[in-house]
Amino acid sequence: MKRINLHKAKDQIARLNTIRDINRQIVLNYVRDQSPISRAEIARQTDLHRSTVSVIVDQLVDDGTIEEIGAGVSTGGRKPTLYRITSGEPAAIAIDLTPRTTTIALADLAGNILEKETFSTSPDLEFMSSQILDRVKKLTECNGNGGLEIGFSVPGLVDQRTGEIFHVPYFDWRNWDICSRIESETGSNITVENDANATALAELWFGHEKVRKTDTFLMILVSEGIGTGIVFDGQVYRGEKGAGGEFGHMIAGDDAPVDCSCGSRECWEAYSSEKALLARYRALLAGDSMKQGSVEVADIIELAINGEKHASEALKSTVRYLANGISNLIVGLSPQVVVVSGRVTRAWDLIESEMNRVAERSVLAGLPPTVLLPSSLGDSPTLIGAIGLVLARKFGAAAL
Ligand SMILES: [Zn+2]
Image (cartoon, rainbow, N blue to C red; front, side):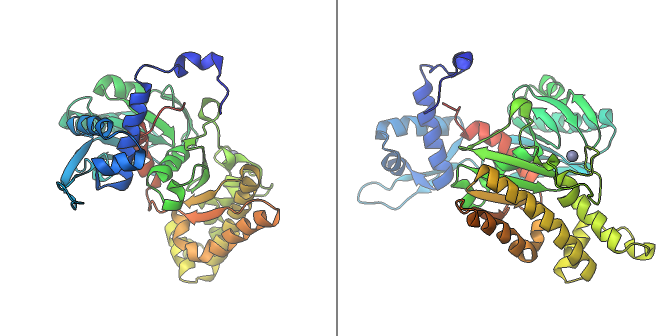
């Protein structure tokens, strides 16, 4: 049970069609999760009346959300028609801005990427605004103006409710008005979200089965910085003005190998992000500029996997700090699952024992066990996150 907040009563009051909306979303999610599925099977699993399911299925077929995919096996009478989420038709535009590259993709309702384009991210804010606007406009024009919804993942502080982007620390961009410009020039709805929160949503909708089946988990995104997404009770916890989950800036010591994006040398991010890994590796090669070359994070991870001494040592120290921070979060928040996302998970075989030490530590402290998993979303979790922002609006239900 949840206390009714009278200050928000206007938003929460039950509308006449509230029950109809909830039933529609339940049927839609059965089709998404268990397709191919028939009307009779949905009715059996939901306990909804057959005629109610039929009316909803007809509406979902009419509006193009689900499609027929042939007949199933007969259990005596007529062969049942089977349904799935409509695939192959453009339904969402995803914008994934990262400090190095920006990707704009077209996706269908099932989350499949139909086409995508990646270009370098520039620190020039006005240039980036026009780069993004031009491409998004082209995609919306080719796919029925205003018909596609847009999801936008940003490595910074945003207000998801108003679409405001307050701060992108990596480039020190402030009060970026790109969302209102996209909306007014394309007529499409846009949902903007912090990259870690978007990735947490992607885990909830597309992630490992153990993650999708849990209501409460943490997602740790290891990239240039450290992002954390908190999912409580099946929804992302955003905190006031979307600033929740900024654990990357919790204090982890006072002698980090590199500056945090906020300028401090005390933050968890400065100890356990990709840039900390890079700094440690470079320090181990100190004095030999020939050896340093233009080594990248992906190279260090690959070298460590192949057993190279310095890369292994740099990865080991970085993961030790990463694991210590995760341990603190487990002790404080007691999630069922923690998902780690980012390129370091390519070396999961090497880092798994350190991660499990952390999980076992909380069990020793008398807490329920937490499962630690590498993300199953591949190398572009924030792009999947941007798609997830649109799909969460289509498949989710308003909190009751
Ligand atoms: Zn910081």
